[in-house]
Image (cartoon, rainbow, N blue to C red; front, side):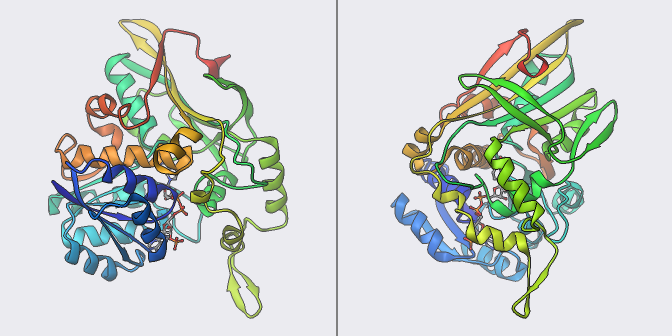
Length: 399
Ligand code: NDP
């Protein structure tokens, strides 16, 4: 029986709250707190359980979060607000000796650069306080890192090549929308791409490397090489990796609109003066784009996210492909969300369950692949994200 504080009432926060409320034997009391309380109230009303309370909090303000924690006394804080809030929330957790979890690594507001160094720097302080921080427990990062740990544990002696492949073959019917927070999403895909090769990072122009990759039950989709945060922790935790890349699909229309927005300066994070006050073009753009949590109804098609791995088993070359396909309509039916919020929120709930049951337990700051993947893999299907695998078959990314 535990108390959990969820920060952020957006697309992902809604799924986490729904899924936690559906496991009352673990999540006995839930407090959903966000900048706009009305959004938390709406989610709580949709769940319809007396165990879900709501509150207003500005998570950038450490003192406000400390006061909320002291009032509610959670066993764990789940941060599904934005990456900017990671450090202030970790500070509030340290001050109150509360364990912490998130799904995206810290980014400074004025620089689109996501790196684990800021959060890893909290390790000794979390260890001394006897509390745990679990970083990146969504799908990617999150399940992709756990898939890698599972593959390394059961299917290889050494892993050498890792390709994470992320396809959204769904159609939400909107002219242009991002599937998770537009500001964070556009910052991620307009920055330079990067991949790991023979012990160093190779940087490329944004979206400059792409090719069709075949996805199960979907077929070929143009896939773009991006930098994605789990690559940083995976190459550190699996030093045998010679090669690690991340691929994501985008439709031609999405890219055309994005290019136009970029060319006219709407994706910039440099402040500009508008009617006598400073505004950030990307933050203004976010306001006019659909909210990720509003995309669920009528969204059709599937996502397919997985890991394609090549390495050595018993002295021989071996390959392994593990993936999940998630149907937007099925996600909507389950918790009223589209599949991108769903595939992030379900693992966040299960990661929290692993911590609260003591199956993942240690003091300090950790990435998900540092814990035993088996108990998580044994349960993730039951909560809505079953996985499939192919052993020693040609890898679609290598075709
Ligand atoms: P949304 O924009 O839908 O939701 C973000 C929520 O955080 C909003 O409710 C927002 O409040 C709230 N928020 C923002 N700033 C603050 C603040 N200072 N204090 C309190 N609340 C705040 O985004 P998503 O739900 O799509 O994404 C949530 C997180 O999940 C992001 O960090 C994203 O990067 C991550 N993510 C991770 C993935 C993974 O696989 N690992 C995949 C997809 C997303 P308001 O309503 O007032 O704006």
